[in-house]
Image 1 (cartoon, rainbow, N blue to C red):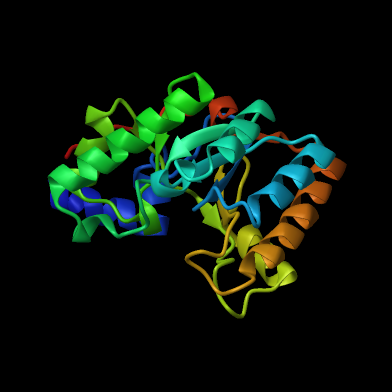
Image 2: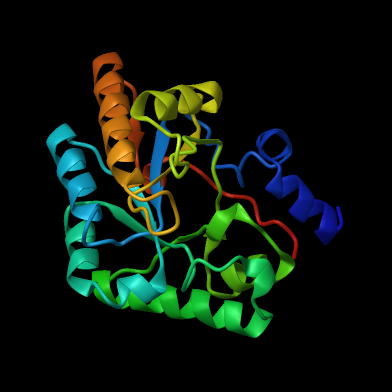
Length: 230
């Protein structure tokens, strides 16, 4: 399959789930991987950490390097609480708008900063907006990271999102073995959207606890993401 076709398949949710399940974060067991993007944010991320601690759950946070370097104490707190840190890129620019060398350096630098802060190598890469390109895939591969997107989201960045709407959107596509994308900040979303995501997260976590669902970070997902050719 050509690189152009690979990128097209990866970028379309239904196709990705069917043709590239590993890239979509679909694992071999009923475990649900809970992931949050765009942090760390000292305004909002601590509220998610408190909720997850209260419910006894852990998640994977895909963080931006430019914010990780500004808030190293928060990054360490996230790791110390048992959460998994992963690379979302240096900033939130679409990878199609970055030069390949700058993109590679941003991914490498972010992975290095996180590794230094938490004392362990990071494992995963998710590009901003879930947009893939041959250069983004190569940058992750060259840094020793596996690229993983998601199989379900809440569209929680939208201005019209409400906690119940987010949950309904999640329910449309989330299945056992899937990976859920949410956001722990409103930096790239409607102002205040993180509060609605927090409320939706509590609704989901409460339901999962009641049903005994297996929920946690990607490291517990049994996932072996596919290496998509660059």
